Length: 319
Image (cartoon, rainbow, N blue to C red; front, side, top):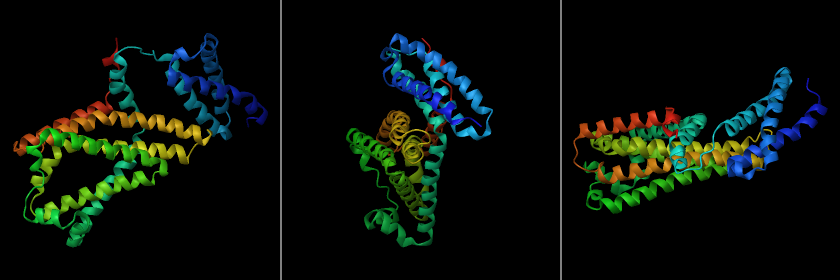
């Protein structure tokens, strides 16, 4: 078993490497002195040896997990060339955001489960109790659906204004869903569940009125971008909540700060996706473009989104 004395001797070095990596991540290599740059490489090698020693002792798995994470961050800091060019923004969209998405996939999947589960519940409750949709949607919208009229045609006449309003609303929902992660995830879960429930109720209400094709041909072109972006923002909120509830070896404030930095990457990555979705929702979704064309467009956009999120685009930013 690793001795307490050894841990007390080594922990200050771990903390120092942690601080150097964090400062470099925030402000770049220019924030380090020449001596600190030398320390960065030296500490990395020393702590790699510490990790090897810890792995030989089964009772030290908690410390080993912390060092493994620290060394992974340090490796990225040391061996990734910092880009100080106009390509830095492009690099974020092509590499940083997709990598952050994949690195937090577990949180995104939990967000998806909350959203989809609430949607299924809303559909089931609407099917069993026809009055439920009135309590959720209000009598005016229910009457519109029962007359088999879509409530979206007014968008066509004011496309530019509608596009701006839609973008603002979508960004507001995404940011709120993320920010509510600070409530230990309860607010994020509520936002995901509420929006999922609403979609499920509308979907079943339109289905019982024989309007499924009209509804989903409207939703599909923009929804394949908008809904994943909202779910990703929910995953960001849950990542923030995870840092708050499970700090591990870190002080809670530092854990929340790191989780927040990671979550912000996810939210920033959602912004252009939601902007594109807003344009499509205003200029394409409510038009009389053929149903096959709308579903074909939705399929193509979804394939592109999946390829973007799960693809490796590092070579695309090489300069």
